[in-house]
Image 1: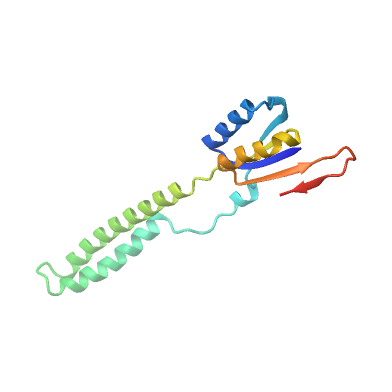
Image 2: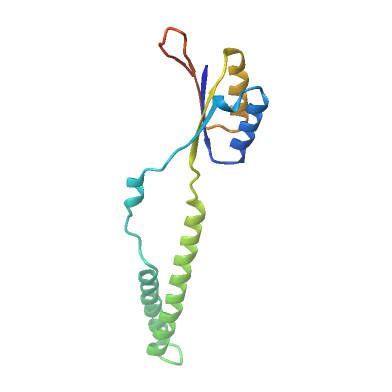
Length: 154
């Protein structure tokens, strides 16, 4: 039997491999392969606004609000428009870097790992249960008889 399990790279994978080795499967019968990301996917980058663009747009909006309010305030519309522009630029930059920080925290991508385990039919169910217990993304089995034709079980 050949058992195939797909994991995200994590501590659960290491624990599953340790338990599989404890269950009388030699290391020579376990193959671990780290999967690569598509390099073409990383080259494409959509247009996202820069920090300066966000800051200027917020400065424009806040300066309009400040100038409009300045007609009834003591320092006049020009001073309040400039004050609004500086405050808006600061708010825009802060919002940009806050959103960027949240996106990078969510963007953490764990690479997938494929584990191939060769065992006999008696051990297959036990190995499959170990893989599922340690949060495998998917598990498959291939039974290869002596005739050379493959039969898949899911």
